[in-house]
Length: 89
Image (cartoon, rainbow, N blue to C red):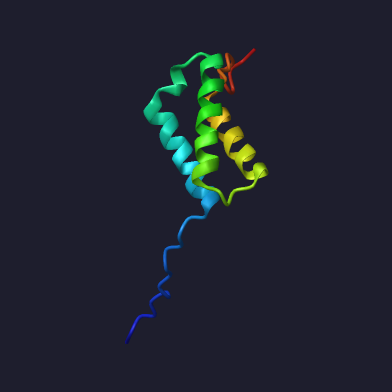
């Protein structure tokens, strides 16, 4: 008896959008922008997005805006909730 094996799938190549997003997150982690003050973060994002726009020329303005929005959200601090779930009031 032979067992049916699932068909092999090729790993797909990431799109330019995915590559640019991943590169932005990599830069965020390496450059210490998470600890920067908001004004410095804005300047860093301005410079980095200009670089990414040149590197990934095929991306539209809307795609670059979306990537920046994702990066900025990633840099925001986690919201702390003071209430414990299920705790009596």
